[in-house]
Image (cartoon, rainbow, N blue to C red; front, side, top):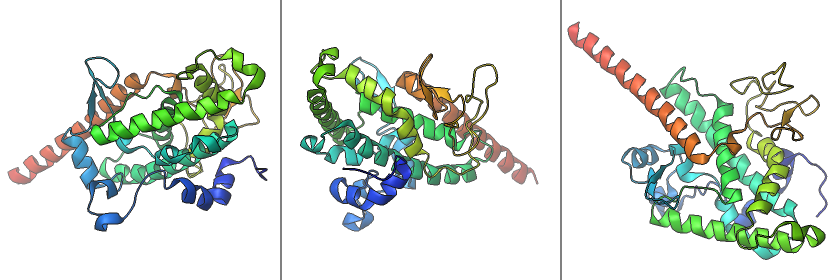
Length: 301
């Protein structure tokens, strides 16, 4: 279908109701069962935090094919990709059909993280965690899901859903592969379509980044200068995006200009998770030490 804009934020705003009606809320927050069932808990509710802290779903033993756990950060437990599970492969007639749904997931993920970031800043003031960094981590996880590299499987129910989504994505990329015509011979893997999925992500990551930052504040900046050229790097001027009209940010070394200020999606997922969990531990430890010191002072008084 012909669209009037290439802006994913505007396109989702125009087509949002239609997409939600067809594939559901990407975050999966529903109000059935009186809001008491585990499936109905809001993503960053106290109950979800307790579930994580009790280690019920934090580590997925053997999820990476080895006898070791892949410990996912709290943010990853319920990433907003539920709409992708509902896509009918036969409706995918071109890559832009899939891109619209991935952008819908990214936009809702960004909006969900924005609310959590504000809540987190109240609990851990001056934590050093920026909105753009949090968006970059989820952006990278979405990239891993699309490319078939995601390590997280969760509990039995989550694992079943993850397998369902991965199979759905294989079917979708199989459909895209079948429509490639002459370019089809370039992709010999007709089981998992890893190279096709990698190339699809490389070609569309800037659009997905634009979608995940739709709701980012105008003042939001990536934590370090990555825009422009390597000799004079600059920070994102607004909304966590490098300017489209400047030297921009290369997709990867020698690649094309992009608004994406991060390479997190090219860092192995497990390494990102380990670093993120380390930061979370340090923030919680700092908070507990401060509380302990304050309690001791009060008792001395």
